[in-house]
Image (cartoon, rainbow, N blue to C red; front, side, top):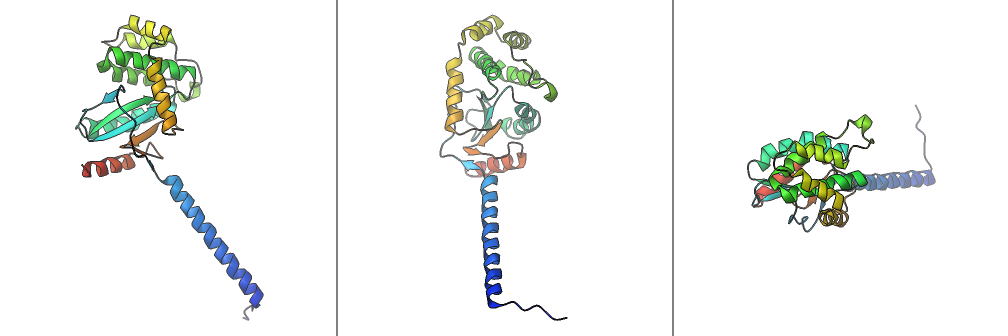
Amino acid sequence: MARRKFSPFQMVVIFTLVIVAALVAIVVINNNKDSNSETTFDKQPPLEGQPVLGQPGAPVTVVEFGDFKCPSCKAWGESVYPQLVEDYVDKGKVKFAFINVLFHGNESKLASLAAESVYEQSPESYWTFHKELFNAQPSMENHDELWVTNEKLIEIASNISGIDTQQLKQDLENETTIDKVNVDTTLVEEFGVELTPTIMVNGTMLKDPFDYEKIKSLIEQALEGN
């Protein structure tokens, strides 16, 4: 069978198209690498005044930027968080902090005010209240319904020992802890948080907060460096 012969001009065109295609492929690959890479900051969010779980001297810090109204934050708390606590926090290797995000408007704000009030009056009760807030979140199909109310927050707190519900009620009515919530909002803006949950390991922000193997990898790298 005879083969088609290409003119010199056609050869130049083909060669040019091959080069262009190769360049496009390189750009796409590089963009994909960038989109899948983590972002590392030269500092971590300050933990002073933040609720922190674990030993204060733990060498690695994991921070969650989370929203009590966010279904993905609830899912992260039910799947990744318990494993993180078991593998690292309980063993004194990691301390875990939570920073409030208000992406869901007034309900997010109200829940954060309540959580900060509980933390101020009873730090040892904070994490139980934190968990019960997420447990109270409706199922996905009812996610948009109003559920964070003063009454609901008082109801949740009344079932947890160590919380003065009368004090919590006054704090909610007067927005007593608004300054602490505003500090968190400033941190959300400073670190460019766009999604919840956003997870940081020693200043490195993950693209996929549910990638526990990546979280473990970053923790192990940090532990090896100490």
